[in-house]
Length: 225
Image 1 (tube, rainbow, N blue to C red):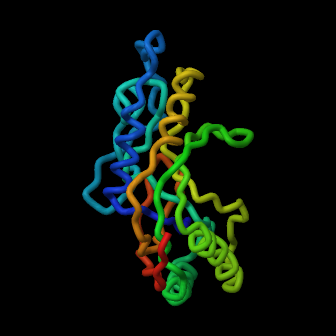
Image 2: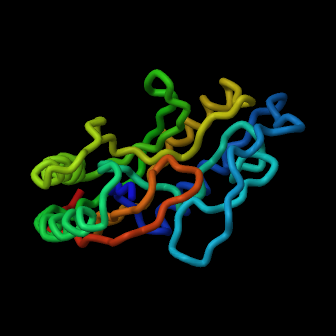
């Protein structure tokens, strides 16, 4: 099974960000086209604690227009590390070690402020930046890969970015709409929260078919931003 770790803000924080993104409409003359980009997959409803399993409407998800495929609030998370495909035994070892280590890591106080889009070659994402106790957040991001390596587990070496992906551009996305959306995120300063958990998931953060929560690992220390 593929396992990854992520920081998941509280539901009210994700809902606040989701509403901010959805409030940005195309400018006059940049209205949605008749047909939006079709969904990449059909998503099944589920009653289990599963993220990302939702059907998309004809227009891009969440916005009511086709210029952004918006992620709903329950998809808003900050991936920390992907561990690859693990056996059940290795996933249990990993969770046991992370549970002990996480209890010694800070619980950073954070808020959402700032936006970015199309930041590297091949990136189709629109992002909200997470600020506040950046050192506490980076400490978590730096600490997970070495722990996995000590267990002789594969670890994704991509740079940890304290960003939340709020959506993906579509074939219909206009430059003015994208500028307005990033500007809205730049002006937005969300409610502060203290992050209490690191969460393990089964699946892939970018997987349209969904991923399941395995365990919430309590963070130990407290911080003030």
